[in-house]
Length: 201
Image: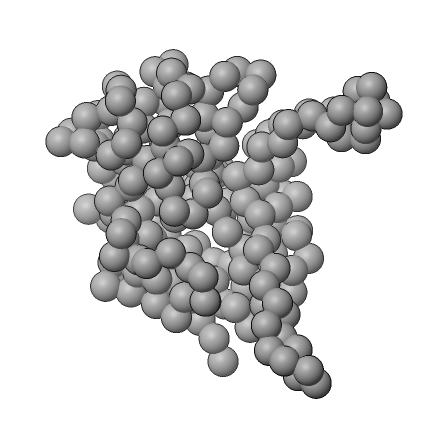
């Protein structure tokens, strides 16, 4: 089965969050209005982001190190979200009547909003924090690999806007490279076999 995946160059990511902002703009994720506290009586609205940047500190004085890792759904070969979903059939993962399904054509993992019951099992099971609960719809949502853009012949918004050229789409991801060169703290790739690999130096 063909598989879309990610290639992340850790040496080129500068932590600018352009990918995060592009994703939020492209997908209109919550909050849709200003998150300023005074707009809502001092209460910040809940927040949904399909992509974010993890900032990791390391090293020791006088040589501190700051590493940035752009993160999103990794469209795994064995998605823990699908396996934990009570309204999805793990024996038939490409069935679009599942709440969570993995497309046979490109391996993209999607959530069917008409079937999702908002139980949050997928949120608990994903080792990458990809599924996000939307308190407005009471459903779970996540990165779709910008499927609407792919179908129109474009790259995902995060890839297009990456100013450091650190984030790339891989059209035929090789699962033998799953988690290759992963930074410290990245979940064991043997758990779900994520469609992401990393480059350094």
